[in-house]
Image (cartoon, rainbow, N blue to C red; front, side, top):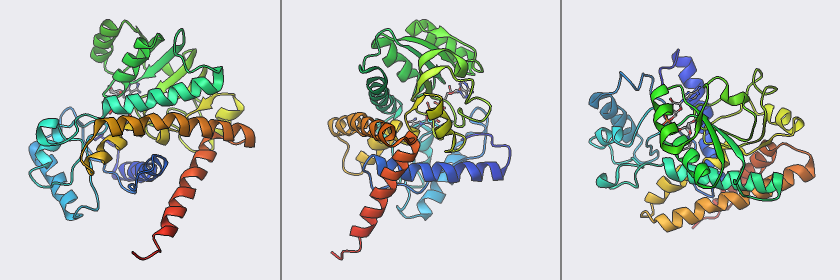
Length: 310
Ligand code: NAD
């Protein structure tokens, strides 16, 4: 949910996000993807029971071919309203039969990706003594910052909401910085956990990090920027692999939620990314190119076996 400048801007965003969901699901070995919802509106002022019930009615018209839940600008409790109109929801509060907020499992996945990137770059997955810059301290970014501090990193972080930065800085003992400067902060790891397009034509040559790994969807304005990151020696963990933890959690609800199974599946992000980093180096390609090849191969292979009649 965002106050998009126009319907076209919302449409462009939802199409890119939908494509990202397909890749994210394929990379995580899940048979989902292809859809996403955007709601045009300001989360601070435009939320109402009627809005989320109307959204629920649209979701219900798809008869179970589409399920959704919280993301940017929405929280699990918003969808409690939608539940009056549709049962095709995931990530609802535990009291309403869901698996609850996905922020921490997404952050747990980001940490697996961070360890894989550190291992590949520095031959050790440890965060001890590393400097991590977190952009966005919301549902995911807060837990990324907390986990990085717990693992011995120095964390510098920014959020456009000054109250959030103040609260988290005093709770976690992190160094607050300006939301517009965080991307240029010298650090080992830049963790974009706010919105997309953080790496764009204006910022790509200003970055002063060794590694980029975060939760934000569509971190690159376009995929060609992955080549520029490679030329600059910056190791990029493709967002659709690093941020799959929340999707893995809510997809598991469909089989009957099992936190141990979810944790196990999220831990596999480490091995998937390590293999992609190695292959990208061996073939002289960007990590995005190699990751997209992997997911397209899986989509083609699984599509092919579905021709077998059961
Ligand atoms: P959120 O809305 O809870 O938090 C986003 C935070 O970023 C907010 O605190 C906001 O004030 C801040 N922010 C916005 N623009 C900023 C800027 N320019 N600089 C600094 N801070 C800024 O969202 P979230 O659920 O934490 O998700 C964060 C990102 O991760 C999004 O891109 C989302 O699509 C992605 N993601 C989230 C999940 C999940 O489980 N929640 C899963 C996968 C991907």
